[in-house]
Image (tube, rainbow, N blue to C red):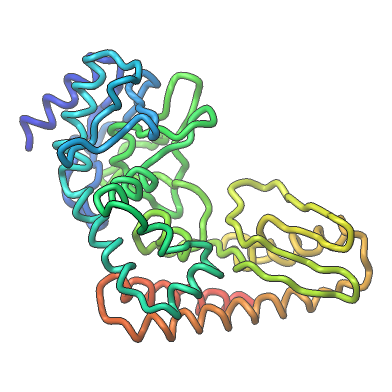
Amino acid sequence: MDDNWDFLLSEFRRLGGIADNVFQKEGKYGRGIFSVDPSKRARIFTPKKLMVKKDDIFLEDNKLRIKKDKEYHQEIRDFFYFYQDNFSWGFGGQETTELLEKGLSLFNSNLKELIKKYALVNLEERHKGKWSNVIQKQFLNARAFNFKNNSFIVPLVELVNHKVRSLPYITNKDGISTPNYPPSNSEIRHSYNNMSPLYRFFSYGFYSEETIIFSIPFSIMIEDINIFCKGMSLHNDSMQIERSGNKIILEGLPIVDVNHPRLPYDYFDEIIRKIANRNIRQDLLLKIIKNNISIRKKILEQSQLIENEVSNTLTKLMHYEINLISSHN
């Protein structure tokens, strides 16, 4: 492990990457990145030349490889293969992903239908096709970074675990790096994005006590106006509202924000102001919140009927979301 890690870092640095004062080990949240010397700063920077487009990767002999017709220098290919075989896909990534997907496949039809309708995840579609390709696709989806409007696998930075109350990774025109933290003996972690625990689970495969929760999809008639929410997570402060005739479409709606408790109400007030309809009352938000709790209880009831590690995680996060929504409204 130490020899492989040393070789990985030497090649990473030779090819333009920065890996200062870091090593990989098992921690509280699984394998993660830590400081070698906690009295010094730690940093990883992956340049664009070492990133590989997600769509350029395929499975060959159960190993992740770059498609033959894609233009990558041979030394980049060699580095990527060594990294995937020894630190990512081939070092527990495949097994972890497969355990998750097998657990999800055992969900009953009622639970799958609730997840499809309210978590926006069609498990039947997700698991269509050759099983090895399903696992590869979910593995890459969970690890891809958005860079210049494309999805990339970002070696080494990809090994850094998510933490809710932490800084986001840094993106510039040259590549992606870990946040500029002061020296610490704690695991180096960063925030992936804003997402409800439910969506985090289906997107990344782990339970996380997020501080913000977004509404499930809903459609409500107010007199002759239909308010429809897509139930998406919002990754910035922009408010996306579409209006088509008597239909008002919201991309997403925050219903809990631990760090800013007034946000759901202020956000909803701003929606009402933009719609410019005085017939929409503030208590409508409370009805939406109650509906969110009710649906989550249905998902919880169904997940408790199944006994495996994946359903237990879903049960745990449903309890967390219900309690958080109830205590902040």
